[in-house]
Image 1 (cartoon, helix red, strand yellow):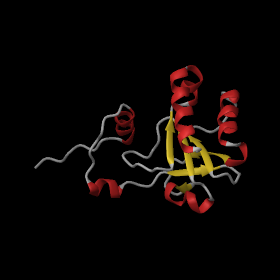
Image 2: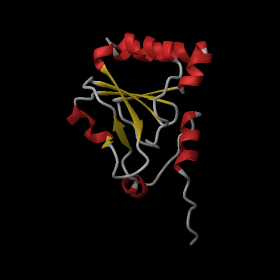
Image 3: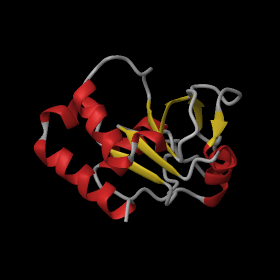
Length: 144
């Protein structure tokens, strides 16, 4: 009996982003570490998160997104790379966070969480009207 090769998280995320459903045995799903978010200061019920640290890229786009949600409702975060850093996704509600807007690929893998809205990376949103339209429609549905 040969062992099945383990797919990397990045490969799994790329396939999921293309709409390809990847079946993962329950034992592997339970063994995965929970994704974590390093939170910046703030107390909004939405956290905008991405892999890289927040810089000064695309200020007008970020201003439009936060204005749509409500600036007082937004805080920022970054996906943590370690299992000990940040706050686990399942613990975010304890910090008052009810919604996660993730830009680009997420470390969530096959997990689905109704609180997490995945959008294109900021650089793609800045260039693509279709990506922005998709984000605005998704936000409209969540902000009702």
